[in-house]
Image 1 (tube, rainbow, N blue to C red):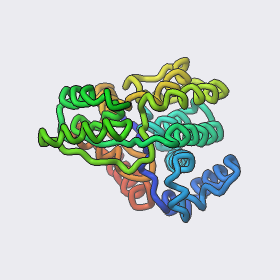
Image 2: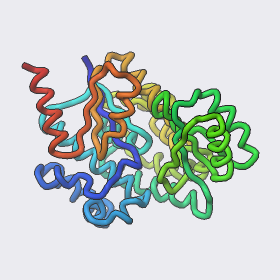
Image 3: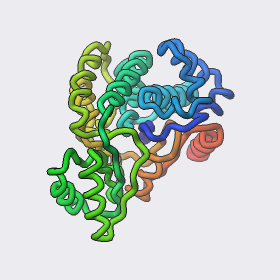
Length: 310
């Protein structure tokens, strides 16, 4: 019986994130206050009081890393660990910090920079993302291929076998969605301010690589699965895979399947919502799934561990 910690990705952020645990656990409060000091602005106030600022990619990413890492640190202080770490997109950075690939300070500054690069990449572009539901992958691929003459359109995320995210410029996206609708396939437009995980982030990827090469890297002390290839990250691959990750497909459900093959029977999402936890339930109904975002969900998980150990 093995456990994997999952770290929330962008889109999970919400006003008040982390406040319940911040108010009740000094270790969580200390990490939030440290984040303020590292960034040079009041991230805590943004998380708790300023929804408009929190929605900005450059704030959402460090906010999510801070929240997820503080929950990880709280569990660690209680002697609770996982056999594997992974996350969705931004969550992979949280996973790497938790696995000691680089420090919390370096990770925080890095994702703040990553967020700014992503924001800048989409200035002046009309783009977005859609979730395509319960549609065969070959149908999605053939549809987007038929729309590429209109602009950039690509598969961005494999969230579950029944939820694939397409991303790109609005004209080809809307055409693809229209074609799929004619075939009775459903889609949902995502509330995002860019076309994440596409070739539109090529320049951002090159700039991010410069920042990644400045990191003081350490060997991973807990294995991490990469979004890019749904396989374990070798210590020597960290920079190259994170450089690719920003513009590449997120292979989330393939990562979950890989971990199940490795004996993982429990998945625990550390972050702000239960989005990843809900994905895992849809991928495999036989594994145990938890999420931790506040006192209630934390206590539920701790109680489940006590029952297991009786």
